[in-house]
Image: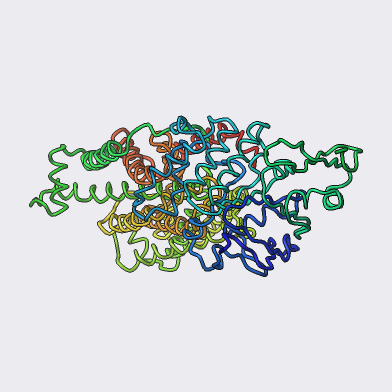
Length: 270
Length: 357
């Protein structure tokens, strides 16, 4: 199966500063939800920026659907990869419907033609439960609704690969679960989702694979059980971590949880 | 930015503003500094000037002169307003305008430089109609000046491919001051030569008098080029509101959009200055008023801003001619008197936003 996104020996950096990401090899396949985790400044968001062509690699390359990103026209890339920013900065005074229609840009001809556009946007809004808010201004919505509006715009883009940057950073517990459940659903529907997150527990519950990035290098990757271990996390996040296993019966089976707790080191009693 | 729902539908707004432009052109022909014409006389004169009816009376000659003046005024208002709307869209900042980021200063400097070099020709062009090559040379110099100064300011404000808006505005102020200094230097050097000094003076404060068909045609050509570019800019500018990376993610090519918007805005501002001198603040005030009235989607805003600019400058010029007659102010002076306080009130009402810079 051709991967949706892949990097080969990817190195990234800004201006003449040191490389932010070095030698990254990674692949995202259809049906997968992959969580990109790592401490602040590890280079997670930088990796996402490379997929939208905002950063030109210093070395290595980015492949989208098996083709080098650098050779894809901007609209073709946008039809293959949708990018979900953290918040709708600067877009608050748009109507929700107009905002979501922005996702159709790559599908529209120069002079309008996008016969499926309206239907796709309507469906996207329905999918995230915002059908009733189409005629409201974005900034009138709650944080959780704004997050879903962003997701609706990405869905309207109809790209098989979805990049998500810290989708739950400003959400309460209920909306955190709801957001990741929706991302999981999208992956199960055949999309590939790459989500940057600081929340190891959401990653553990919902992701198929975790990529642990530190100082621009991939330190570990694998299933939650393989990555969320003290030997792996301790050297990177420090010792104030309590790691345990979710009780059986929780959705997703017995997956590890991680608690940041000062002065507590080691594994919780199982 | 405040919530701005579109308040007036597009078609009625276009028709309304379009009719207003036509009415104001007729009114401007009727109320001139050299006495009143009746509305019928004015209309007939306009038709004669356009070659649609036969008329070679004195009134028709007067109407013909005033018509080119009115059309140039409408074109300059439209061009400055559209240039402002494009720059505000591309920099995602309501304080961007051709005068503030130095386009007009650079264009004036270029024009003054050409007047200086050309000596005798250019003043003739300014005071008594077009002189073919001199007109083109001055317009070209003004365009090059505008492009050069804009390029300088934008490159000063760009780091690692990103334009920093505060740096842009600060660099704009600094470079504008330099342009002002150089302009003053040219004026000081040339003050003995009455013709050159007068030509430069007219440029500095703008002049909408003594216009020939070539002036109206120049500005009309620039506007036509800008209209052709609008389909390649309007949607892109809407998507720019969320930042360059966001727009890029949706399939926009930000570098291309920025370059096209800046080139079109520079062309409009440069041609305006070349035909009418420096008329500041139209590009700042009109897009704001238009956004309040018509909403902020550039697909609606850009064509409406163009017409609003024409209405604004034509209306202001007609009003002051009707009220003050011969004692009318220079358009640049009038616009500064209106625009300065408007800009201040904008700064005061946006203080919260400025703090975040």
